[in-house]
Length: 563
Image (cartoon, rainbow, N blue to C red):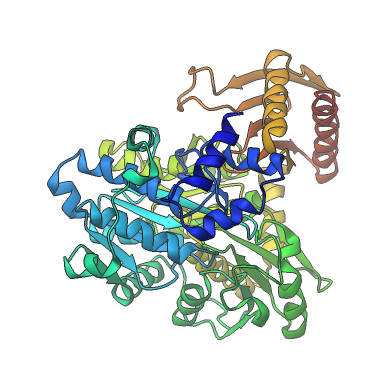
């Protein structure tokens, strides 16, 4: 019962503040809760930290944030004084304690002699990536839990190219966190002292202005219907100011913002689960859309790196586009537009994750552009942009993954809801001038390239028991693949944990069948979930959907057999 010993240490150690102790005292008779809070340390991975807010070693709190930052500080210090002088830029979102955690991180870095640039207020995650490149810092931190529920927060670390850290740096930070030892070994100074010593600089407008200008420069067409009606919701997150600003400055005349979701709300009162990938998040946007006759609805998640959209169909109803569909539309729009302008590079590529659909690959091939696949996550997708900077092997044009994350060009090295909102609006306005909706264009792509359909299933399995069941499910699929589903026969199994792929080892299994259908299964890296991705291709929509149903039935039968 090591967790109970840790619990008692936190209760009795004078280092921990009274509020923390009071919170822990309140659960003294709930052993399951004590176990969940202390059975492990909140792990620092390539996505940094993410977890529920609260007291304990397995929670996001001032102590786990300060410990992680000391580990980051020691990593930066190991590279020498010039690296320390380059500094770290910090941004934060609307969540509970985001501002406090960013302040603690800044004070720990400053106490270690590392220069810190701290945004004056809420900023979207992609602007953090932009700021790293603009300020030439060695690293960046954003305090956010992205689209997780309100009781979560997180801590993402970026490196000098503006993309999230990869394994090599993450392992250095992890080892340095372990070497810190006790929480009391963390160095921290007062904010005023950091300012007085010139180690802390507050930033804002100057970065905003340049970021917005660079985003606008990514526009592909201006001869569009700028009177298109657009409903936008930031879901009470950080997108409100930058997305509205870039659309306004691009000349769109009819932008309607959902009033209930316009301003910051860390409880996400009107939406609950602030994930625009879930169509329930569009409830208020749909109501407003019908009132103002909107052509499209756009929603960004709380830290504005992900974006989803809905499109009005011929019956006046709003149809959701999933990440694969929006990604394929954007790839087509970008490549078609640049082909018309004769500005496609000879060695250009789109980059997508291994669990993202293949329609974009067919579109890229039409324009003689390549497709590169990476592990899930924009640390890998934009990691390719960094790699191409060094090798010159390819030119990064567009990156995306099925979970509604997209980025065009390389001014930002992460998924960007500001850039994507502008491009989706522009794309819809471009086709509206031609008398088409995005649904019309998507159907044209299906007719040209085949009916690619998809379905994602996420199964939540929390706690120790859930974690162990996820491991057993993965082992079942790994040890005994499903070789045949109806008339589809397995032709290729890729085990990304084997080390025999072009990607770093990862606990992902992917199964390809002889009719170009496939599925993949993996545990989530940030949430207590196991995810299944199912894809099909056929000559008709009906046939493609039938394949999805057959595959889902076979996969779920296997999963339900694993206790």
